[in-house]
Image 1 (cartoon, rainbow, N blue to C red):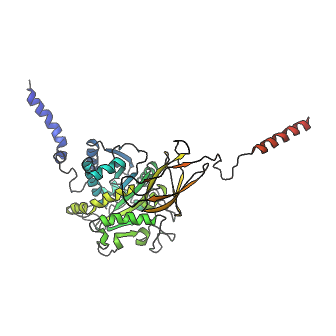
Image 2 (image 1 turned 90 degrees about the vertical axis):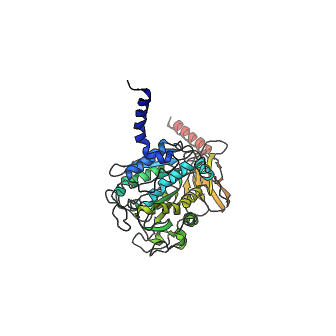
Image 3 (image 1 turned 180 degrees about the vertical axis):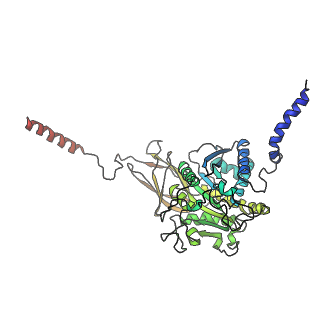
Length: 438
C-alpha cells in the first residue's frame, strides 16, 4: 500500500505541470513576457487572468472567418454587468493581422491593471468607476498568417478572405460595396449592445494619433483634405492626450518620411479612406473613437517589445482617464424615477446628437468650458440648460440629470388629439342624421 506522503507528492506533481507556465506570476513576476503571442498563447493569457482575478470577465463577441473566437476581456470592480452611470471604454487591437504591437500592448495593459488594482490608487479608482473592454485581436486569422520582421508588406493584413477590415464598415460619405465580414459584423453588434463612450483602435506602420473623419464628401479617391467632424475639438484633445503622454509620438517625425504636427492628424487630412471603423463607431455607436498608429514597423522584431510598452504605458492610462472628462447623467420623466430611453441629447450647435440608454443614461467627453445642453424626445417637452465642464479631471464627469415633462402628444409628426368640442359636435351630427333617417 502506498504511503500517504508518497501519494500526496504524486498528486502534487500533475498540477505542477499545469501551472508551471504561470509560476513567474505566482512569484510576483510578469505573466505576459515581452514575447509575441500567437492566437493560442493570447487565449491562454486571457483565460489565466479570467481564472485568477475577480475583476475580469472573459467573453466572445463572435468568430472569425476560420472560426476563431473574438475574445474580449472586461476589467472592472463588477466586470460582468453594466453599472448605471459608469462609462464603458473599448480598446481594439490587431484589426490588421500583421500590425501586432497594439495586441501586445493590450496584453501588458491587462496585466498592469489587474496587478495594480488595490495597490495603485489611480488604477483602483478607475476600475471602481469604469468598465474597460479589451479585444486584443480583432483579426486573429490575419495574425496567424503574418510573420515577425515584416515591416512593409500586406501579408496577413486582411482576414481569411483577404478583406481589409478597416475598409469594411458602412461609410458616411459613399457607398461601400464590400460584403460585411464576420469580424466586422461582430464589432457592429458589440457597439450597439454596450453603450461605449470612448474607443481606441490600434494599428502599426506609422506613429500618430488620428481622428475622424476618415473620409470626405469627395470620397476615398479624392484629395487629402481636413474633414472636420462636429466634435473636432474633443477629438484633437483625445489625440493630443495620447501623443503628449507617449515617449516619442509628439515629436511628429518618428518614422522616416512622415511628419505629423504634435503627433496627431485628422484621418482624411492624412489620406481619405472608405469604410473605416472609427467613423462607423462614432456615428452608430454614439462613441468618440480614435485610431492609434503605434509602431513605424508593422511587425517589428521581438526585442523591441519592452521599449514599445515603455513608450505607450502612460498614454494608454491617460487616454482611459478621459472617459471621466465632460458630462454625464440620466433623463427621467418629471416627478418620477422612471428613465426616458432613446432621448436625444444635443450639445450646442455642433450639428450632431446622441441618445440615452435604456436606463436613460448619457455620457459625453467634452473639453473644459460652458455648453448649452438640450434633451428632447417626442411626447415630452424639451429641456435646455447651460452646463460647465471644469478643467480638473476627477473620476466622474460633471453630473447633470434632466427631467422631462410629458406633453401627451403622439410621436407622429402631424398627429393631434381631437378636442372635446369636436367630439361633441360630431356626436350631435350623428344623432341628428339618425333622427332624420327615421
